[in-house]
Image (cartoon, rainbow, N blue to C red):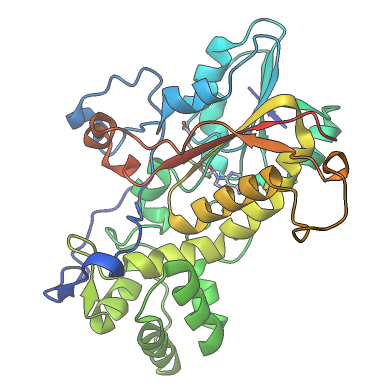
Length: 359
Ligand SMILES: C[S@@+](CC[C@H](N)C(=O)[O-])C[C@H]1O[C@@H](n2cnc3c(N)ncnc32)[C@H](O)[C@@H]1O
């Protein structure tokens, strides 16, 4: 527990004259780029779009959703640059505390700037949340926030290999201290597995052609180790994509989700949140693409409607399984002002649920 590069962009053949997709073909606005920190939410549009700015998405809404009790115990599962964490700390009293997690060492480094005895920052993936908290003697908490996806510094730092805007090593790991890079994965995956990854995680209709082109490149002795090389290969076979989007957007999304096991992380963590939340404790999750949002929505719905017995099943209402979660309000999306200030927020969806007292 820890307390409290940028290289020049290349054109990398990323432009395309091919036909954009329309209507139902649209991926739900994947923001290859997400957001991070702005404690005051006062940045101008110019500042917000500069390489070093980090704007937290749905800052007020997410922290408000946690209904902070001054003496409560809170968890920020995705510290990033600490925008949400700082606001939570500002609402806590002396007896409250916040435990934040991030799997990215540069986020942990940035968190060292917060010198506050009520704050702890843990370098870990959030799927280890329950274990890590119990090691700290914490079995119940009053609120948990997950602001999923990647942060602006991760996207904007070329060497992280998340973005097709730069030609850089194809890494894509949020935690660069462990796991395989996207380049390593492309070097050893099978055609079938790669097609499934690109199709399922990128919702990419050209998954098969992209895979074939990647495998051919590999078989011809040209290992794909840079973002530019991958973007080039994808652009050579993708003939239709959303207006204004890069043809490699979906493929990059798919590889990122796979390399970081993002959906597995989420599905392992939501039941832990349920177990950790004290009665009336709040869970707030911000998703950035439909795959995640669907999982969050379904999880809350399943915990709300525990009655999955057939109609007319002979059981008394009092004996039916009782809901463990109650959703709070509707899904919240950033308003026009926030999207204008921070275009990376455009696909964010916040869902909030409250723990009931059912054990
Ligand atoms: C969208 S940013 C969070 C921004 C943050 N709310 C802020 O205001 O600065 C997501 C952060 O979560 C981290 N992250 C994503 N998935 C994670 C996981 N499974 N475990 C731990 N950290 C994760 C990323 O490394 C990134 O720093």
